[in-house]
Image (cartoon, rainbow over all chains, first blue to last red; front, side):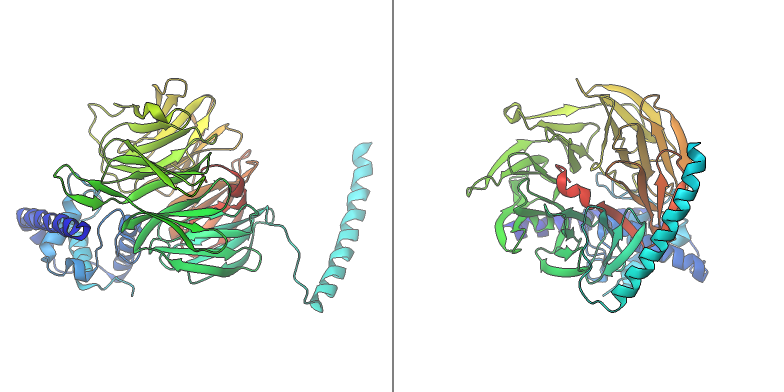
Length: 121
Length: 405
């Protein structure tokens, strides 16, 4: 019973994330492909592991926020992930990161999340 | 007169000490007997990225050793056995690890859930309870054997009539051998009575999305912070039949909330001079409430969103740390004048502060500077720094003898 309910919740969340992604995708696509030098990437990687990790766990297996590993995000286009990072999820504890990060930085983070490049085993 | 007398005395004492110490060292070199030591001035510093903890000595500002292999320590916390020898470390990955501060080793370790957040040790020291996200609920273990004693799934029925298991947060111990915790999705506060074999649960309606909680040092008021609305939920443990009441219900009314990049932590909340100092959610303010009627009496503007708002043990100072991205400073507020008396810069990404038991010093962790700085609370000057790998929580053994910690 519990599992069924949780699965339903998750599906709803994913659908709403997808919708948000489609809505915001054009704005995010304006970002350049790779505008980050390695030191900048190290800073962003630290941000993802440590600061996103506060809510999503250092291994990104979830906490107060949902898990963010490739198996959880792999089905989402990068644009949808970027839209969630950029705008946050209204009604949840996920804040919008666009006041602190550029569209290029958000896109880079989203690509890493989707590919699992920052995930420790 | 006295001064003249003291100087030679000190010199003599120093010489004696020097001889004495070298004598000791010579002895210990050939002596393998265990070094006898109390634990009263020891503590643990969580190294969150490496899954390790440092055993430290607060008097000597010294790292005694490192214990490794504790898993995902994001948001990890520690409670202590009554004899203050053992620390119980709560990891994010569901790991509950019992460590021995004297031998600096792991005594026992259980993976008790898929995802967890914090815990508590019972008033009598017999039980360690862990707050779980996945599956949502609380598990209680025998503190000596680490055997499972009680499994309490946080089941509830949503508004749509579906049942689920809520994430649990803000787990504390309370007098009467109770554990108290909040249910994030269910918006409830539960008490779990461990005073006898029945392990009775009592449920209370709380506000929307409680994300953390505290219990006042006397164990009377359990207060949960609400993410879903302004205000806090208060349960009077002396009069639980009155149910949960809402306090500070409209502190942010009419104001645009700022994005919250790190949830405030309520544990270690400041109560000083008859007033409670509370981190505002989504505002650059510390709120001040009158504890007699819990009315809002002041808002202190600070430089960012407060995460920890902690009173020094003498209640004269309130130390405030901040959320990302303004998290490289700590501000110190005078509890009487309510003015900021100093802004300190302990390093990048300040995560936690811990006062020595009598409050003469405070230890501050700066995650991205890989450093812990010890400040003198009178001069507000640093007196020592220690190296640590991505340090987060700092927990001294004096917590063994305090309620709710």
